[in-house]
Length: 190
Length: 277
Image 1 (cartoon, rainbow over the protein chains, first blue to last red):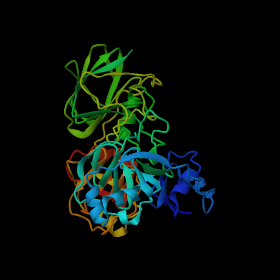
Image 2 (spheres, rainbow over the protein chains, first blue to last red):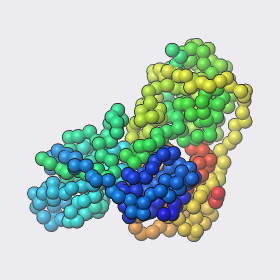
Image 3 (cartoon, helix red, strand yellow):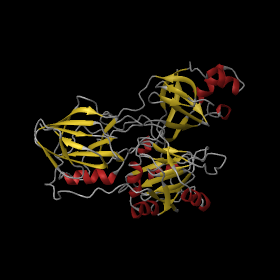
């Protein structure tokens, strides 16, 4: 597998399964191993990145997922009605689709503990809002661009807010500090 | 206990070290000193380990009182420094007696001062670092009036140099090709003259100038690095700073070298250019 240079100590690996690569790769001597949608970024010296990739199997196996984490959801998001209209279904149908989905954390970004989760029913794949909100409350469950996420802290946001969750997703005093890491699975329950 | 007391905090004063490693896959930015060269130099001037935590001071307007005998050095930006009203210099170790006050005026060259104290600043580390991260709001809080910042044991020796020359920041930034760039885009980036958008911060340095041609769609989100030159749909590049989000979906047309990022950190305005590294 070829490493694409990204700055002086960054090496991008293009892969069909970033989660499998990121969770199986030998991190020894690397500062960070970061999955994205189609890539894994290795941070560190080139020889370390190359060595880690050289011993990677051609089709790295995905670790057997743990039981999905169950997150308590309240479906009262201010955009729920709009989402229902865009998906041409009732609010209850939207909620059912959200509760039936077994979501997988593909990668993190945007803010500490913000996990981009895949596995939403295609009918709930909507573009981002035209106008981002200046402030989205912490714990908001949101969907956009095929992903679902829970905002770990209050921040600006451009996703459709469908509900909220009462869990702390990120706490720097915990180890690991994030509840959800790439590869983890999630289900919403009431 | 030795410490410094903050009598004036300026517009943005942050504790910074080499930043957070090992948590980027959870969305935690690396953070860390923006002008790494000036930060390491300040530590060397006071005899600290080069990665000791020190203050990153935006613009100036800061006054600190020594609580104990301390050696302090100020690097990075250049501007007036005085101790108890007597003029002192940047880029030199300053021996400060208990109760003495060191004052930093408005920077006239560059924009980020680094103030290192013998022993380093020893506020508690969060996820392995004493850096304040402005995106995730992790690490020591933004420095405020009245704060007492204890100093630690990160001193490795006595200062070996009395004074180093202050080098003004370069006005041309060296770039490497980016993973989504084309030769044509890199040519355009290096031909044009760029101004600083005042909305720039430690998350991103925004450029103003003639917009570059952009592709219609965004790309799959990929992990990002400090120095990545992203091209959003408006065609005006953004250079990712130390607190950048760990992933992003805009094409990356170039990457500013780590050395030139020190010059980017000191960019307070005026025209700048890029050149191929």
